[in-house]
Length: 410
Picture 1 (cartoon, rainbow, N blue to C red):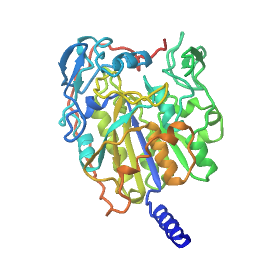
Picture 2 (tube, rainbow, N blue to C red; picture 1 turned 180 degrees about the vertical axis):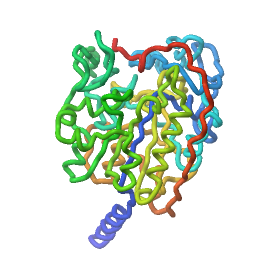
Picture 3 (tube, one colour; picture 1 turned 90 degrees about the vertical axis):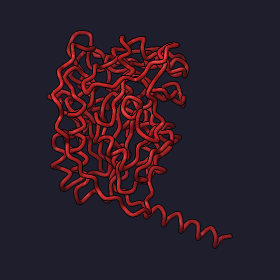
């Protein structure tokens, strides 16, 4: 028996040492549900129609330019409707939520899904919009924050410690369900903190304070990072990434775009343009020297109010939220597969924690699937897939729509 135990321990140690991933890159786009993006993808659990109350509604062909739809906490719960998934029409007149793209609309996203691995059971971490979900990307928690910040007087410039005076964000007590309001600047443990402790590196690339999109630079909401030394060294302009990655890539990197490339539904934003930006980022990572040691996760931060037919699992009071797309891109993913494991944003943290032998931050990343079942670390490495951003058709702007991320608390 002792000899057998020794053999098993050696095998486990050998297996751990053969994991070739040394870099994890998380690219976060905006506001799209799975059925809206990939409901027509072969082999995926997608839908081409949905219920609107008792009415069966065909998902119409989505336009490249879409209006932002309401999708805050209580609207997400209303849409889910105790698992019936039939109320998306209530806050989006004209069945605006019941639309989906075809392959020809997002051909490069489709090619990544075909070549690498598409996950069709990824759920946002919390009901509602961007701000609390972005917190889960770095902390596996939103510190009970349940919606986006809102402003009493001034126009929004930031969602975090740089917010204007009077900015508030709702929190919800998981026991009493009481709603309170706080300034959106908190101190909670994050994966960057764990990486620091382990002597590992991290970078967070995002829009700067003078650019549209700074609201998604979520480490601005973590007080000890925003007001610490690493704010200037590790939170960097996203426009620098393609140049930086030619010579350096951190152990864990988060990337959020400036607004025009975010895929966020707005009257003047064309998803073709956002797709092209994403292709540029992924092409940069695929070049030597980092491709053979990297796992890229491309995902969208919430459902954006768009229809999805899958009832989210309930893991705690806050979620899970509605389903979103995720594509894993790496030399070691199970190529050309649709993966059906149940994941959420904390799963990407769990993946990094496993790769780098780090402890979990919360019950979320401790209990979630760590996504390694999407990979075969012993396979012949896949070659890179260099794509060209396509020429985007001229699309007329839509009429006015609700403000960015129509989530003003409740």
